[in-house]
Image (cartoon, rainbow, N blue to C red; front, side):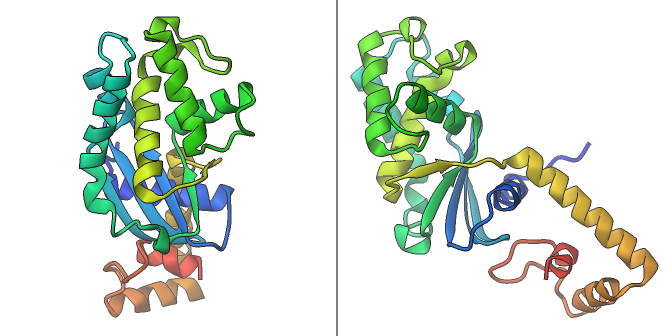
Length: 239
């Protein structure tokens, strides 16, 4: 069992997204789980910057919607709490740093499915779509009364916190369209393991990539290269 840091989780998530949904534009990739949110800037297969923040969809739901009651004030409070955690990232992840935004998480997938099933969008997440979700939550008044096409039963208790978090991200970072991604952490872990196994195999055979990797390590490339978070043997294989 290998325990990975939040930074490694962010890097591998970006790898999963970039390989299953390739593109050349500078990207902001967002991933959230129960208690944290990871944000990554990158281009192509190369992640440049990654940060982790102590705010997640389940955490917000448990704090502000614990008994299932859905009110306008609770959504405001949840958004303020999320915004406070993300405030330090405003400069690093400003709109000038990226051209497209992608979301990779169960929350993003759930909201995308709801918006698509109700004819609000084709699955893309926008501030207007998120406001529509919030309005439907407030109208329902309680998670158990929230009946939305496309919303799975197991998502009801945590959807409010997820929607509040996504709305805060869009508002604070100027995201007009958040595209659901096909890749995620699971795919990134598989890719990373495969690349490391290939690197070891090539090193053992003494091939050209092996000599390049050893030379890079000798020159100090085992340390993180500025603007590239990939491990040095992976960088050599992806050149």
